[in-house]
Amino acid sequence: MQLDFFDIPSPCIGICQSDNKGYCLGCFRTRDERLQWTNLSVDEKQKVIKRCIQRKRRKDAKKEAKAKQIITLEAQQVKPTEPEVQQPSLLDTPRNNQLDNSAIDVDDFSDFDL
Image: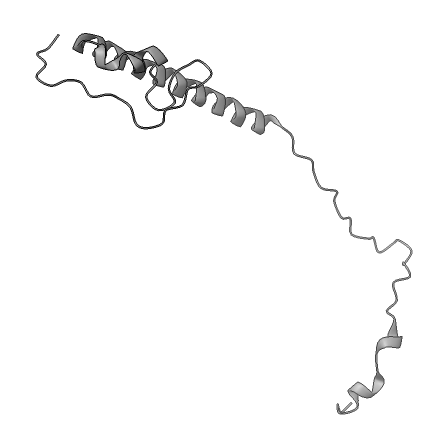
C-alpha cells in the first residue's frame, strides 16, 4: 500500500447503463460499487478499480475471440460461383441473330461518299 494524499476519483465516464451481467458499460462497476463509491475507503476504491480493469479485459478478450471466430467462419464459407459464359464454338450451328434493319434509315448516309 502506498501513501494516499488525494482521494481516488470515480472511474465513471458518463455511460451509465448496465450490461446483462449488471456491470456498467462505461466503468464496469457493479450497481453496489457505484452506489457505495463515496463511502468506500481508499483501499476499497483501489480494489474496485482493479476489478473493473479485470472485467474490461475479460470483455475485450471475449470480443476478440468472437471476432476471430467470425473471420474464420467467413473464410470457411464457400462463395457461390457465377455460371461461366461459354463462347460458342465455330462448329456449332449458327443462331438466328440477325439485326433488324427496318429501323435504319438509308437516307441518313446520303452525305457520305462511297
